[in-house]
Structures are given as C-alpha cells and as structure tokens.
Image (cartoon, rainbow, N blue to C red; front, top):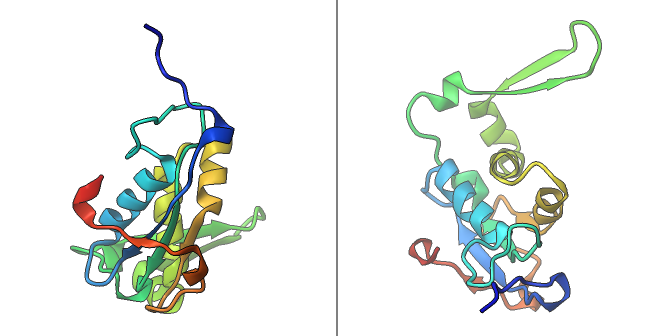
Length: 145
C-alpha cells in the first residue's frame, strides 16, 4: 500500500472565522497558523500548500497576558545606522491590532514559499465586521484542531 500525497490542484479550501475577543493573542495566532497550514486536515502533506482561508475578527479585543504589553517590542530597522524603531505592544495593539496578529501568525508559519502563500490567505479585522460574507465562512471553535 502506498502513502497518500496530496496534489496542489486537488485541495479544497474552506473559509473559517476566528474571534479574538478576550482570547490571548498567541492562542489565536497558533490556531490561525494551524488552519492556514492545513494541519487539521487528514490529507495534510508538508510540501503542498493545503491550508484554508482564515478571517480573524475583533483583533482590537485580543489580550496580551503577563507583562507583555510593557516588555514586548515591535522592532523595525531601516537599514541605516541608528535606524532602529521600537514600539511597545501596548501602543501597537492600540493603534494597529491587525499588524500585531499578522506578525504573530507569520512567526508561526514555515519560513518558505508555502508560508508566504499561507499568510496571503489570512484576513484580519479590528472590529466584528468583515468583507468576506460572500465566501460563506464557518465559525471555527477552538477545540476543533
């Protein structure tokens, strides 16, 4: 008997909604990364992009536990001397919560082309409204993965 290997063209992609309200940022990001990777599917194959689309709503209501809001930083560097910019996560979650969640999910995806393709299927919204109602997304319950 041979091992089943999924083909890229035979993958059926579903749409899932994750609600980040009053949930830890990392837990929501880990669930989203697993769905984007396709690890919840029986036909998961590591070298094939077999993940689903994920919509995260209520990103502004996500919670950082412990001292992370004050001690964790979002850092960017321009490439020039003295070009380091730091922003505390308390400020980042207040101004751009979509970016904070997207960065957390990006860190949990593979660092290759499959990870980049997977991240393109992630949609993050600060509020409870989203623009993807036409795709008929299903609400994902945390214990399903």
